[in-house]
Length: 96
Image (cartoon, rainbow, N blue to C red; front, side):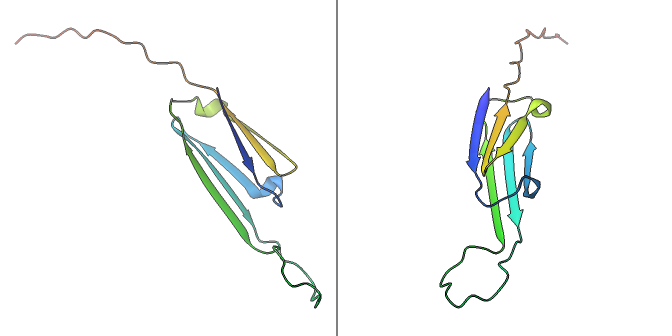
């Protein structure tokens, strides 16, 4: 089982997308929220468009259809169960 944690402060759950294949997990979060108003006292604001992209290559195959994700207070937790290892099989060689 692989556990992946990604901090995504300021994002809402509906702004986060997780995609899984047997060899990787991809996280994409996009926000287009903008700060309203014109406060002359504000020197710097991190409100605005934000885009995060993370790709995790996994050392062993996982069951992509069983990957789960949970988002809580800016923390994304992904659980990816390992796939069963393929068994070795002897192959008979045919002579011609």
